[in-house]
Image (tube, rainbow, N blue to C red; front, side, top):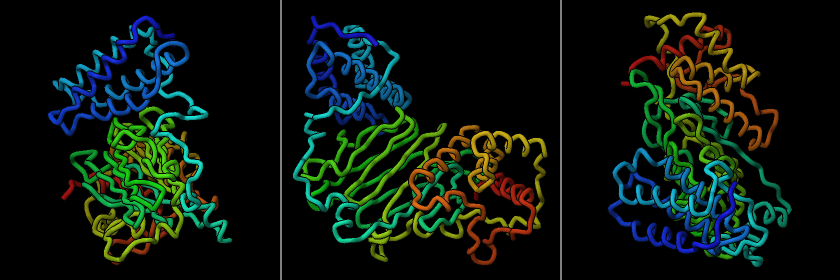
Amino acid sequence: MGMGRRDDPSGHRILQILTIVLCLPAVSCQCRILKCNSEYLSATSGLHQGGEESVEFCVALRAYSQCTRRTARACRGDLAYHSAVHGIEDLMSQHNCSKVGPTHGPAPAQPTSPDCMVHSDAPETCNYEKSLAQQGRQANYTHCGLFGDPHLRTFSDDFQTCKVRGAWPLIDNSYLFVQVTNVAVVHSSSATAASKITIIFKSFQECVEQKVYQAETDDLPAAFVDGSRNGGDKHGANSLWVAEKSGGQHIEIQARYIGTTVVVRQAGRYLTFAIRMPEEIMNSFEENQGLQLCLRGCPTNERMDWALLQGRGHQDVPAHRSAAAAAKCKDKLPVEDLYFWSCVFDLLTTGDMNFTLAAYYALEDVKTLHSNKDKFHIYHRTADLPPGNSCPEATVPFALLLLLCWICCSLPHL
C-alpha cells in the first residue's frame, strides 16, 4: 500500500466539492452513487493531508472505488457516477495509492468524527442486558434466519421452504421493522431468493433516532441510508452501529439498546438474513401490526406443498445429479440436517453453486446467534400445516422427499 504525497492537498478538496455539487435529484433512484459519495465523505471527515492519514485516505479511496463498482450497472450514463470514477482514479494516482489493499481501517481509540462520538453519559436504558441485570433478570434470546430458495427458520425454530415472491415483512414490532424482497431465480419455476433487505430501527427514548439500513444485490453498505454509522446525535447513539465484516459481502448491525444483532450477507447474487433478538423485544407488537414471517412463518398458501404433488406425473431426477449435488453440499455441510438438504434442494433447482455458501453461512450464523447449541441443527421440517399442506411422514424415504421438492420448484410459478 503506497503512501500519499503531501504537495497537493487541493485534490481531495476538489473531489469533495465535486461530489457535493453532483449530488442532485436528477440522479436515478436505482443508481447508488450518492450513497458512495456519502460514505466516502463520512470516512474522510476530519482527516488532513500527509503522514499516516494519507494511508487512511488510500483506504477510503479503495472503499469508494469498490462502492462505485458495485453500482456500475445501474449508473451507466450518469454524470455524477462517471465524474466520481474519474475523480477517484486521479486521487489514487496523486496519493500513490495501491488499488489492492484494505478497504476499511481499524477503529480509532478516540474517535473524533461527530458520527462516532462516544457519549460517556449514555443512559443505562441504552444497554438492554445491563438494564435487565440491574433488575435481576436475564434475557431469553430467539433467532430467525432466511436464506436460499428461500428457506425460513422462525423464532420458534420451525423450518419452512416458501415461495413468497415480492416484498414480505420478516419482523414488525415496536422497535424494529424488517422487510425482504424476493425475486425469481429460475424463470420457469416458483423458486425465489432475496435480492433486497430493508431494516428500520425505530426511534427509542434517549438512545437512537430512527435509522434505515438497506441492502441490495451488489450493494451491502457499511452505513445507514443517511451515510451515518450509528444511532444519531442522542446520548445513547453508540448503542446502535453498523460494522463491515467483509467488504461488500457481510455486514453486522448491533442494537445494544434492544439486545439485538442483525447479520446480512451476500452469497452469489442473493442475500441472507439472520437475527438474534430477546423474546421480550420479539413480542412487543400489537395484534394489528400484521404478518411477520419470522414469528408465524409463511402463509400456508406460500409454503411448498409437498402432498399435492403426489399423484402428478413425476419428473425423474438422475441419480448422478442427486449424488453430485449431495457431494458438493457435503464439503461445506457435513451434518445431514435441513441446512444440508436445503443446499441439495437449491442446487438441483437452480444449478447455482453459490447456494451452497448461502446454506453454509446460514448455519454459521445460527452457531453464532442461537442461544441453545442443542438446536443448531434441525432434522425435521415443520409438520403442523393443515391437510393438503403437510410434509411427508418420516417413514417416506428422504430420496423420495428430495425428488418431490425438486419437482415442486421445477413447476411454473402460477
